[in-house]
Image 1: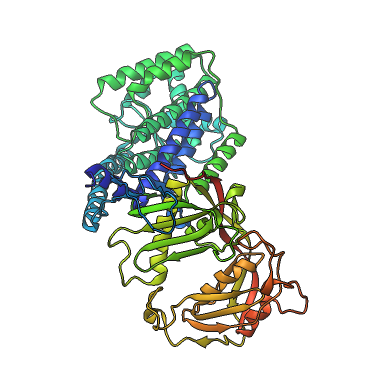
Image 2: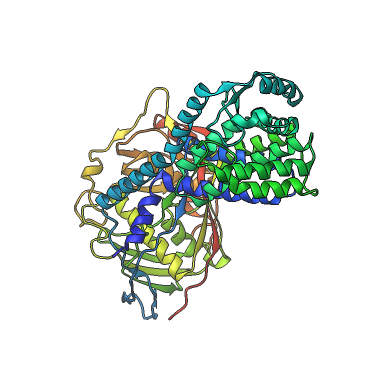
Length: 614
């Protein structure tokens, strides 16, 4: 039975939320590491790095929804039970090589009701937490409005601000207000900035007043109110993530230190340190500060040490630094956004209940040609087949497909041969299952068998490359519709005397295409054995057809036959220039071969071993 923890992980992984949390974690880690590496650099540089990081956090959910997803499997533990069986075939006297651990019991998938209710519970919990942590931001905005309405304009302070604003490079008007509700200097406003000073600022000496105003004007110039608002909103959205709160506090601290550096351009470090100590005493004595105030007494000790540290680099972040941080943030958003986590255990790969593998030494006998049969009873029978044919059958590839590469010489057409018999678990292949669906299930079981018994490791690489697309010609298709359609198709291996099975094609390059009740996808798959590029059905034709055509000339050098011998008989003379091409064959059917580019799965055999007796 699946544990509650596994069920929770599976439910989370099926949503976009897990992907966003993972991306935010990566972003936070990289941002905090970058800030730590820049600890001897300017505070303004560290602030720029952290601000860019918060920008990435806020953009990730939006871009992740807009961009096409790139799925990344997240493994979820599934309990399994291994069964060991031996299947006797009676074909010959060779001792069978029996698969070990092929059968496995996979527990039923987590009920849909559980997944939906768990998701709703998590979503509700997140919404309640986000609202709780956004509430101080809303209250803080209302506090600022109240402070502006009740503040008193101060003419002397206004003249000092106007003089110092020119030196700071600020051209817009910055209002100065005296407010008894604030314990220390404070800046607010984005479009219309204002500086609040406590009522006793009227009694401050000129040096203290100038240092306080220079600090607050630097906040205005840098737009720290905006970055502070956005950081607090991001922290509320990701309230459950401790790294976000650490980064938020670090961002505010670096903003304060950047403004302290601006003060030190005009003042002695010791005098400013004394003023910060006085501010700390004010904050300790007061009952509270506005919720959106950036300065807090817990960071004042760090700021004082930084002010007195002569080794610390100071100054503003240059335009190049800001442009570089912004560019990296934008690139990071678009690179990271497409990745989406999916639960890898939602559809466990099926396995055969019993299976056996035998070596076959009749490769030189022409009467024993390779064959692969997926029988309707859920039984797999492979006779005299090299590993190459077994792998192509498992991954639904044409025998001579250029999409499959790699592997040892003994696994190719002229190499070692094997007989394989296997039986699917009871109920895994229902009797009424359509032929294509049944074969797809058994192919997955064969993939598991190859991985278990041959230690096969395949790499799948989606690549864009030239393909032949089969499309409907201008005048429409010229196809003979079969009397039966998919719902009427008899099972493969039906008793003799019944109608012919669907999706059965014979022939070849020199013999043409001969198929009864076949789809255009079947034809495209069949002709790939003699095509120099993958062939894809893009006709949107869903009916079944009876198709009879003549042969066609080679599009590429003919590979050896499955027994390793040069082509003979009907395959001889296929390079005849007078023979029609494959494009001519499709043209007679009212179809057209177009050269296009498409993303195609390429397969590479990374590792494989000979099966050994147990």
